[in-house]
Every structure is written in structure tokens, then in C-alpha cells.
Amino acid sequence: MTLATLGWAVVWCSLAAAKWGWSAPASVVYVISGTPASLGVIFALATMRARKTWVMMTAVALFANASLLALPLLFDEEIRAALLR
Image 1 (cartoon, one colour):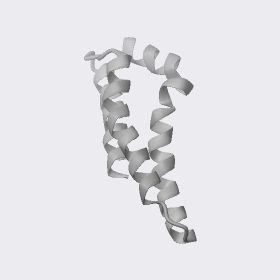
Image 2 (cartoon, rainbow, N blue to C red; image 1 turned 45 degrees about the vertical axis):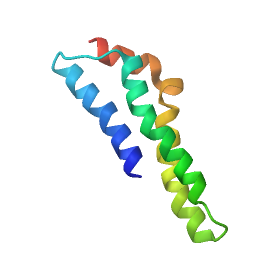
Image 3 (cartoon, rainbow, N blue to C red; image 1 turned 180 degrees about the vertical axis):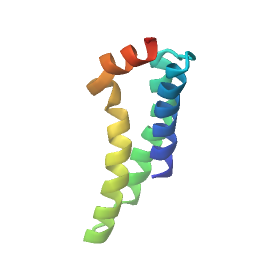
């Protein structure tokens, strides 16, 4: 979850900076936020165990990191438009 938080912080801070006129290219934002997200997915899959409690706890971290990795596929047009305003 820490890695997902770091990745989402990069995305939201870049959108806030774009609001103030300091925009970074969307591909740079995706690479910088995707690096901790991919590590978070690997760590979440590595720590998953057979007990229901562990599966539920790691599913939260897995979803947070996977949603960050899916961000360019789902909202690329909207993020590029927000960064270019």
C-alpha cells in the first residue's frame, strides 16, 4: 500500500501542478508512478497466502497498485487533457 500511495501521490501532484501551470508530459507521469506500482503488484503477489485473511489484505494492495497500472489504459485522454490545460 505504501508503494501505491507513492504512485498515486505522483499522479495527483502532477495534476495539481498542471492546474497551476507546471505540467509534465503524461508519459513521464505514467513511468514515474508506474514504477512503484509494478513493484507493489509483485510484492502483493509474493505475500499472498492461502488463508482468507491474507488474501483479503493483499487484495486491497493488489487492487490499489493494479488500478494505478491500468490508469493509462482507462483514462489516458482525460489525464492528457488535464495536463495540457
